[in-house]
Length: 236
Image (cartoon, rainbow, N blue to C red; front, side):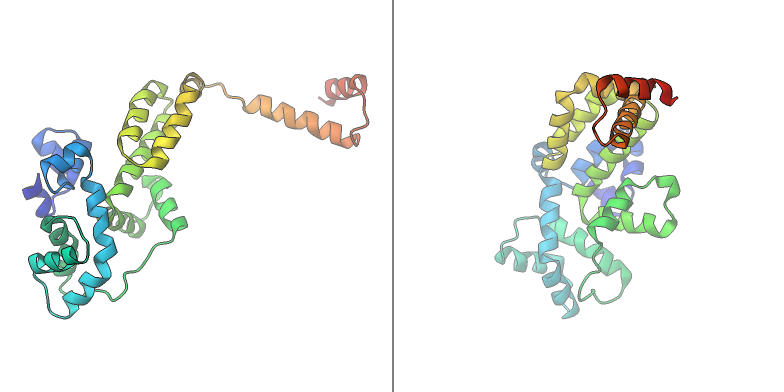
């Protein structure tokens, strides 16, 4: 996996070539060692590298392009990841043939949220490239993106039977927001499953409740039950 991944082969292609699940390939590709993958800490360690990105960019522009040496330097600063992670982080700069950016361009939270939640078919090439670069630098968001899109597909195609497997996936990501969401959905598991499966919803009920409230407000809250009943029955 690492041999193919380091050559720039996409995770989907690796999974198809090796006959493995895409999520399994991603977990091992982002892990420095097999132990990291089994503990689910590979992506978290990879995320630590961004705290040292300004230092690495400055040293790169000063002429130090040896990943092993740069790894040793940031280890002294407190970094606990592997040389492979540093090498992969510098791969994009090396491939560009240009100096490292003094200050990487940052995406806003609103923009990142839109990139993750937007329908892939409605995302233009520029935004698709931004999302791809973002996920390459932050593997944690790749798990979030997969969960968001899987849930959206499950919702639009009414595949409520897949809710249990989705909750398990969300819980196993190790990301607290997704784990919290999964716990909340489990508390109303049957209701959520029905909502994702059946064509019926509470929309009509909510609409009637709002209609009753409007009629009551028109009477300034002074109408009794009998008058409200007549107004509601004759409103149609």
